Image (cartoon, rainbow, N blue to C red; front, side, top):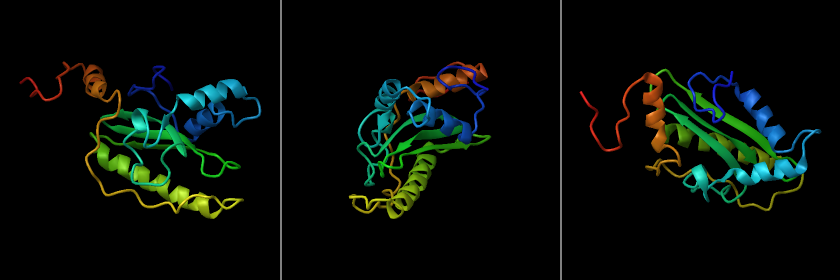
Length: 177
């Protein structure tokens, strides 16, 4: 179930398997893909440790700078990351991680956990590469430190409050009682 084009809706329901299928298709990893469209789509994704919503992510790892490109998604009860790991050019990997909860999640902790999962996948890909990767060993993510907010995250509270029918409270101001 897709409720909005951006995916920012509590009514959107998609499995990680379905999300990976979308990423694979959009990235051109299917037989019927249009190569030019796929290339433009891949260029539109954030680059880990470099730009967009991933600019502050994967900074303590050796996979930043184009080896991971992706898209984030954040609501108060959902933190998601999907994209492409390109450690072994003969085997690019589409992935999707989605963490859901019934109550608001600690975004920095979930993001760090996502980075740890991706780090383990990268270790596996490096060890099983058909041609030895010329990459330094993948290191574990840096210890948990406060991250700068993702682009667009300022609107997250607005989306959460809109959905709940509550007024939006600007950052730094106490909620109205």
